[in-house]
Image 1: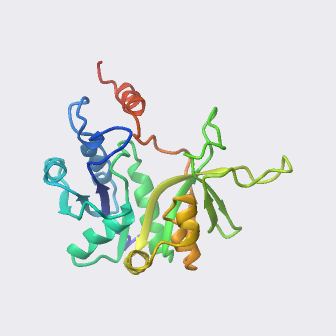
Image 2 (image 1 turned 30 degrees about the horizontal axis):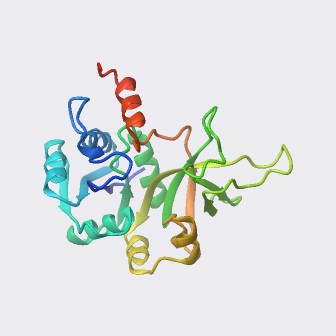
Length: 244
């Protein structure tokens, strides 16, 4: 599809409660953030890949990986706010894809798919996948999404939705937290105050829905394993064959 290039922004900050300085962990031979940026650079629609960082250490990692780096204030409240701060410093962008820095196994094709959704008229787009075998959909750490028949999000929740009274009803869908936005949609998001449901659930994407902005939810075969804990990082090292 022509004309679908996008700016990929990877918000990256050093603070991490469960795994301190996780983006700088380099037991694989290079920092975790570098793995994520390399996957983003492999996306065909990625015109530029920029790390929105909160300090010089992560900026150095980004540049060594072949990406650009933009310093953003450490106190920004969300990844999307950090992305917007970077976009403003870069002079704006028509289409933006937001990939979290702790997603070292993101599929570059997912970035391309999201960029194409923006070119097809979506203001905001994200991904959803079936729950993996053995996963507990009731786990509050696993965000669920419910969508309408047109494929737009009705709600995101940490609670188990929908409640299935019938076996032939819709099954819970796992939200995959990669986002694409038009420049206008992201700017309006960042300029708006947090909304009541956003504060209640602790899910920034609800700010779009509460303000009446449709969020297109695209099917993806499986979620990408993010890195939140030491066990997650060890499993990542095992998957890529790092001797330990």
